[in-house]
Figure 1 (tube, one colour):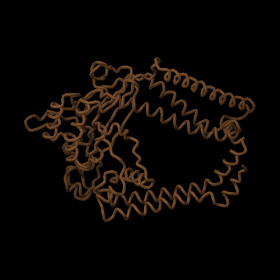
Figure 2 (cartoon, helix red, strand yellow):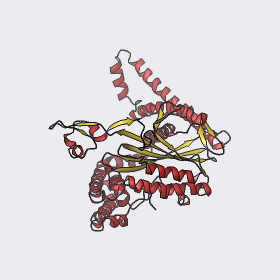
Figure 3 (tube, helix red, strand yellow):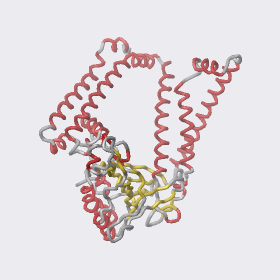
Figure 4 (cartoon, helix red, strand yellow):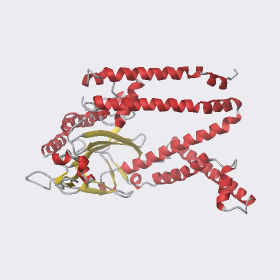
Length: 466
């Protein structure tokens, strides 16, 4: 089955949409393959277009060419304008077929949280399969995605009423002027009710969050009090001298200062998430989930807020663990372990650097050998992720769902990690040249890691008593 991430051209997209995605979409509405999830509304396509008539000026000939002109494209190194390569953004002119030049027009929807969602939208019905298929066929027949297309996005929302949880799927097609298509999928989790006081876990979470705020406020209060005491003892010093003395005092901790700054950002994000007007304006009924006034629901900005909130919280917890580890040095065993890790840090850093360089080189080899036929190896980021996944013999695919959803609409938008058989299918003569050296080098590093404990310097430091 062709998945969304296997798309390599617009022809693949127009094969995937009517033959794979659309039938599976409406099959889900007739059955119960989504388990506890309910489709919030019909899916939608949005297109953004650029100006194809951007002028390109060459340094030598002075000729003015269209950016899609083969003469211009073959001489990109001589083109003095960035727009020659990418085109001008945000084309809002209507377009269509010969009989109706304005069939498709730009639409803009204002968001309650500020900003707007704009593009050439196509809204598909939730359960009318015949109408949905006809709409897809018309878009393909009218060449809705032509040479002016810069990117396209397919959106749909899933709703779990038990957890008051919205899942926002956004499947992107990035289209460059050469016709190359790069698919990628983003997913955000979004709670329609941040605090549901009918659930004990939400009440406990609110109490813990308030306790955390109180804890950090007291931490800031202690830091300010220590600084004022230090300033009172040295009132004759200037502000710069006072700050330098405070930085060198035992009361000062750079990690703690960074955590204070992070706390202010996290607190602001927490307030923004709670007061998000998108969440407060959601209207849930038996047929669909929409914004107030019957407008389409867009949760992209809200999802970014929630994601930033949890990412900063995770980073702050990492810094806090370092502080806990530093405070645990009072215990003799932990102090000895910290000393051992500190002395072995140069060895570990060189070990990690060499491993990264090797993965980096293998990634470039993957691009050269398989980039034309394997989508995940067509750019450096995807090649590095695929190389790392193959080297540790794991399928790293955090965006996949469990097997119970394998028959649902999500299955045709996801793809598993690649392996040796996938590489051999597209390049039988060179797959072994890439895979087996990677396998051998990875096992060499694993053996080095296993034998690192036998180093004399490490043993003399880690001479722990039972």
